[in-house]
Length: 88
Image (cartoon, rainbow, N blue to C red; front, side, top):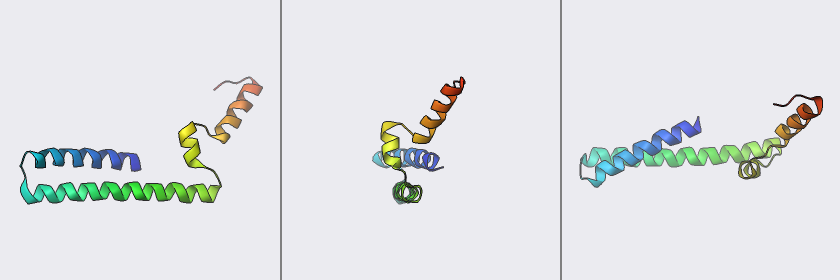
C-alpha cells in the first residue's frame, strides 16, 4: 500500500511542481504541491516506523534483508524443497 501511495504522491508532486515552475495555477497549485509533498514525507516516515516496529516485534533485521535480498525463512523453504526433490 505504501508503494502505491508513494508513487501517486510522487507523480502528483512532480506534475504540480512543473506546473508551478511554468507560473500556472497560482496559490491553489502551490498549496496542492505543498500538500502532496508533505503527505509523501508522512508516508515515508510512517513506513520507516513500521519497518522498525516490525523488526523489533519479530526480532528480524528487515533492513539487512532488503539490502542483501535474502530472507532466512525463504532460504529454509528452498533448502527443504531442494532436499525433497521439488524445486520451486
